[in-house]
Amino acid sequence: MELDEYRRMAEVETSHWWYRATRELLQTVLGPNLPAGGRRLDAGCGTGATGAWLANAEGAGPAAALFGADMEHLALSLYREAHESTGLTVADLTALPYRDGAFDALLCVTVLCHRSITDPAAAVGELARVVRPGGVVCLMEPGVRRLRRAHDRVTHSARRFSRAELAALLVANDLEMLRSTGAYSFLVPPAAIKAVIERGRTGSDLDSAQDGLGGLLSRAASLERRWFPT
Image 1 (spheres, helix red, strand yellow):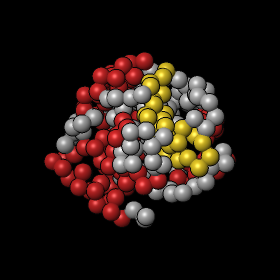
Image 2 (image 1 turned 90 degrees about the vertical axis):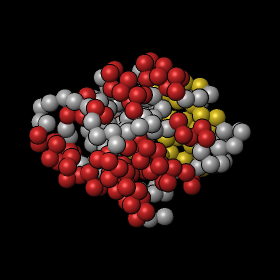
Image 3 (image 1 turned 180 degrees about the vertical axis):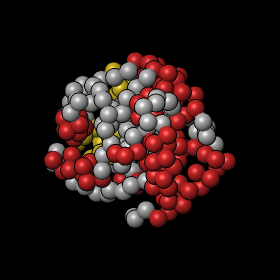
């Protein structure tokens, strides 16, 4: 990812509609499955914009400890400025510096798509290795290959995944699939138009529409979450 994008993330994580909606989405999907207390890992944590909430999630309790791993020093520096964490570590997801079964729960958001992850299967294998038996792994990745646009280039996203592809990566690493769902389906039409208009260009989606068209996109995301199967 371009270094300036980390700075943008840190600046808008509390104001941009997508970060707010994504935290609420993850709390809806992952929250009920979180083991109480224990050790939690935000893998590929970036600035903490999507995973720092794990430190104070319902059921975390005083015994819960949140760790973060990312390969970019700047991202971890920005994380420390805005969030609390038991431990932040510079690490490659394909070679995590943790013992087997070190964590009770693990979150990994829009990381496997990056060009720095040359082998997504190996990365998922590492995620599976560091989570204890009976623990929880949550992945969130961009989908629909035709939607590749300017933002993908500034974030160095090399690939997008179908739900079936992500499920196959998990199952191949002996993880049981508990839940699989898509999200932000209402963004597909405008994203498809942007993909055509922005062909060959590089630019960040964080530079505009922070309020989500006056709150319209936030409301759409909220309505979508209500339809998710339990």
